[in-house]
Amino acid sequence: MYASFCSIGAYAPKKVLSNSDLEQMVDTTDEWITKRTGIKERRIAADSELTSDMGVEAAKIAIERSGLDKSEIDLVICATISPDYFNMPSTATIIASKLGLGTIMSFDISAACTGFVYALSVAKAFIESGMKRSVLIVGAEKLSSIIDYTDRGTCILFGDGAGAAIIRATDDKSRAIIDVHTGSDGEYADLLMTPNGGSGSIHDDGSKTFIKMRGNETFKVAVRTLTNDVVDILRENALSSDEIDHFIPHQANYRIIKAVGDALGLRDDQVVLTVHKYGNTSSSSIPMAINDIYESGRLKSGDLMLLDAFGGGLTWGSALVPFAPDGD
Ligand code: UT7
Image (cartoon, rainbow, N blue to C red; front, side, top):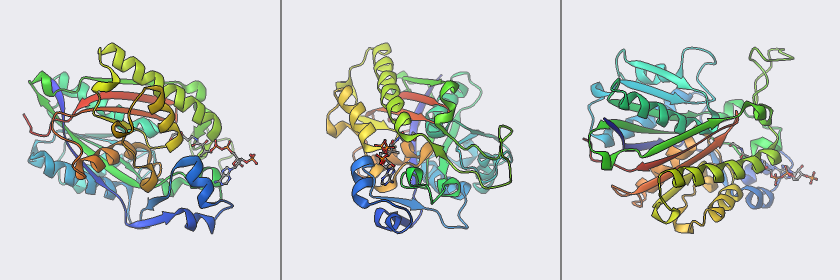
């Protein structure tokens, strides 16, 4: 039994936070943000809009496009670092309930910006082992709930949104996800973290937990790791970068994406970019980007996608995924 990537959906909240809005909030400029990151604007969820609500909207679209009856879904995995509730219940469980999926298995994955690729890897393993047949994977983030809007090093980068996909069992190898690579290295844990609130808190005074990042060091490790991971997965699967229809990297910073694309010799038309309009949406960024090329008509049945993610942990992952929208 193989696992195929059969549908995609995404949701972006309505409220836009532009670079000129940020100029009013911190000491920054549209010119600096555009030049250093490529970001022009990002979306911000309404106060009443939870991570699970955005995940549900993305999932509804992915389910409808898959042609599945929702009763066929037998597992929900949600990748998030901004869950509805820290610790419990999981956001996946809330999403399953809001979608009326019944009492199926559901759980969250914490792998920061690599979360969607980790979820894909776990869905693939469940399907190939025969334990599950139709898995809903969701990347959903309300990062605005963990951003310090006085810290110009982070608040200019991150935004809210969600993406979702249906991964299904198939016996047709030509439609199957070819490979997923995943890795992590906790030696770099302090580059990108939310230091408050957990059992590792040093000064747990009940204050809000915010993302803290050593941006420049993270940048350098990101370029190296994203590039090496793609070189490895292509080599191990005897593929060249020419054979990739869509390179879909984590949308953290245009300069990172450009450096990785150039190192791999990718043409601009192979590289998918949404960072200018959504910023960095962590685990949602890759599925939101896949949805973007689907809705614009660029993503066709049989196209080969190369996903490449990197994030806090540090974690990283890549995947070779044919788009297989027609079901079994
Ligand atoms: O999603 C997971 C992984 N995350 C990432 O991959 C993010 C990786 N990092 C980055 O994207 C970049 O490092 C940033 C965009 C965060 C920063 O860009 P940079 O080119 O690495 O800048 P820097 O941190 O080296 O700072 C350069 C200067 C500093 O001023 P001085 O010391 O040269 O006077 C900063 O204080 O830019 C200053 N600066 C800013 N200036 C205007 C930092 N943030 C801002 C800002 N507006 N928002």
